[in-house]
Image (cartoon, rainbow, N blue to C red; front, side):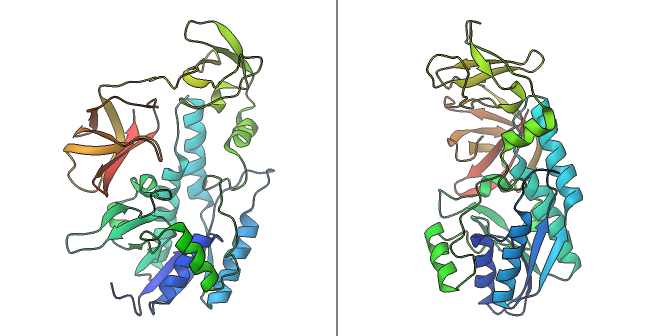
Length: 344
């Protein structure tokens, strides 16, 4: 694709990936603008957003490109935070990064860029978009350890027509090498380990601050009490959990009773829902997907073969991990992501 003279707004997070994205696109002769997306952050809790914004500004100055800050607090709070809290409160397993992409990066940021005359937006996602006469296709990233296509199933298809992922065909090691080559001020910065809107704050600390959970008991599959946990609302199905006063683990959560604040745990990662059929809601398909497909129901989880019939997935092989209500099932044909939905 010839990008010379095109206007591209790059989501600059202050990290290495988005910074290399901007630098690479600048090499094409495109007109680049950096945009830092300011989200909603928990009051009274430590957050790195100001430092990240400063790093993004330093990168923009180094590259000599315009820089803007987009205030997306409303979209973050409503589309990501409120969703996260509601799902945990109901005992389901949320995936906030998917909502962050749908509502913020390819929602608020995409609209902002297009309203200001951008031909494309670009981010540092490790996924690939192939632009063709029949429309864009979303593919897994080349680097399997970094592939982020799983988190992009909810993005409106029309947004991909105006989106670029320059890092999708690269390995992380190559990106680090390019950051040094471009002498970017964040070249040695460590990758963020937090989910998209909490930064250095752990999900557990955030939930404790919001829910103030009470300790409860953990029982085994026979109903025998074996230890204590720090609040059922803090844990998801399949999670490895540390228990107080319990025999040696590992212990995994296999059932939750939110009303009684009781967790059922097991030494084995038991199939809490070894389903013959998985129903999906809030689906988003990029193309017709009925028939044989491959699916993942956890990021970097096992790839399961099966048959998709409208909004129902029938596994054709035994499930090796618990299926958690609220988690996303993402569907592929080969390397092409064809959409997904939320497990009901």
